[in-house]
Length: 333
Ligand code: PEP
Ligand code: MN
Image (cartoon, rainbow, N blue to C red):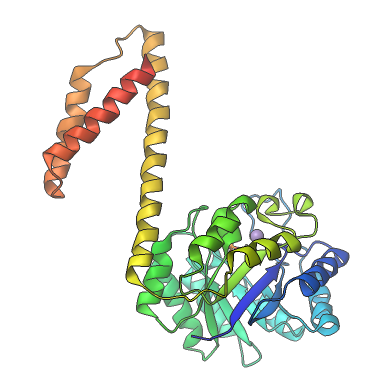
C-alpha cells in the first residue's frame, strides 16, 4: 500500500473550458493535503441513465484537460468507457484513467479497456461495479494488473448505499490493493459527505475521489452531490481525514456492515408500512375488515417454516411478526 494519499478532485463533468479552469484553480489554491497527491478529475464521456440528460462534452474536452495539466502542473484523470477513449486520452497526454461503475459491471468491456492500454498509462482506477459484485470488482482489477498497469480501486458504493462489504472483501482478498473512497457517488448528496469522511477516517483507504464544482447547483450532472472546493477543504480539515491512524481491523469493517444492515432493515420496515397503508385504503374502499386472521396465519406459518431452514427460533419470528402486524393494524385503522 502506498504511504501518501491520493486525492482525485474535480467536477463530475467538464462542461466548459472556463468551468474546468476555474475549478482547477480553486482546488489548486485551497486544497493542501498534509501528505498526498492531488489529481484533477473531470468526466468528458458520461454514462448517464437517461439519453435526455447531458452526455458529456466529448473529445472537445481533451484539450481543456491537457491544458490544465500543462498550465497548472496538476495531473488530470478522466473516465474511459471504450478502447477508443483510451487511445484519445493517451494521445492527449492524459495518463490517469478511471473505469466507471457501469462499465465495471461488464468484464468484457473491462478486458477491452485493459487490452487498449499501453505503457503510457500511469495509473488506472477501477470503481466497484454498480451491482454489488465484489469478486467481479476483484477480477476487473486483476485484468489490469495482468497487463502490468498500476491499478487502484475506487469504492463508490451502490445505489447511494456504501456497501461496506465490497471494500471489506477487497481488503481481505487483496490486502495490497489501494482503495480510494468516493463519498460523492456513495451518498449522492453533499450533505452526507462530512459523515462519510468521519466514519471512514480510520479505515484503510488510500485516498479520496470527491466531486467539486464552483457552482454546484448549476452543474449539468450530479448537482446534488457536488461541493464547493472550499467547503470540502473545511470538512476535510475538521475531521482530520488523512491524518488519522488507519487499520484494517476486522471488527471495524464488521461494525460498518452491521450499521448498514440495520439501516436497510428499518428502510424495509418503513416500505412495508407504506404498502400496508395502501392495503388499508384498499380494504376501506372495498368495505373489507382490517384484521384478516387467516391471512396473518398464512404469513406466520410460511415465515416459521423458513425460520426452521435458517435456524432462527420460532420465538424470534413470532415476536417480530406480531409486532409488525400490530403496527400495520394500527396504521390501517
Ligand atoms: C464519475 O465518477 O463521474 C462517475 C460517473 O462515477 P460512477 O461510475 O461511480 O457512477
Ligand atoms: Mn458524477
